[in-house]
Amino acid sequence: MALTLRRPQTSGQARASDWREERKYPLPAARAGLLTAWLDARLPRDPQYPLGVVTSCYYDTPQLDSYQDSADGEFAKQKLRLRWYGDPVDPYAGVWLELKSRDGARSVKQRFRYPSSGTPNQMGLIIPEREELASRLHDLTGFAALPIAPTLQPTALIRYERIRWQAADGSVRAALDTNVRTADPRGAPIWLPIRDGSVLELKSEGELPAQMAHLGRLGLRRTAHSKYALAVETLYGGESARAG
Image 1 (cartoon, rainbow, N blue to C red):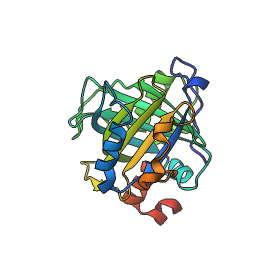
Image 2 (image 1 turned 90 degrees about the vertical axis):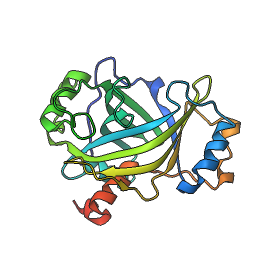
Image 3 (image 1 turned 90 degrees about the horizontal axis):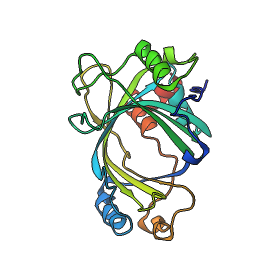
Image 4 (image 1 turned 60 degrees about the vertical axis):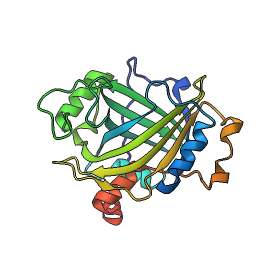
């Protein structure tokens, strides 16, 4: 059973113009410095958030439907996550509830600022359980019915260091993620390195510009890389996760 949430009917609704081509290029961590210099010569750093720490809490069903979609290479899939920035948490950047949808290589992200409240955990914020999550999804997105939401639960924390670049006209965005780690969200996080987790992500409205079209010369190959799938396999084991 695929993880499927109906599209919201509010200002957060994804428009056709919001969809972008997303390309992912895994790389050995040792090549991050070379790739950073290569990108600096071709794109300006993001003016607002050039670098920082990103942490996400991914939600899934007890059967790990979202993981199965990624591991099985499903064409259409969705991921639901809570995302925040900084280490410790940057209160000004906010905490965001994000629904990321993919159709093949095209992706779109709908995000809603999450009104965190209560007693913070060890990371300085609240990881909502399923009852609160279902309520917040309804309040924030306008979903009238969420048959799958009551079954969703915090499944994996993922943290990494990100450098961002953005073309002046916004047509191309690049993000280099390194030092990718994962932890079980149930309790004090014990961070484990994700093997082969470093990745370059490129998003564009169409074809890549000429100056970005030679990544193959750096030994990079485009793949269907998924940090979440790698995190689940790191935390729960590959075969046991798939059988779950």
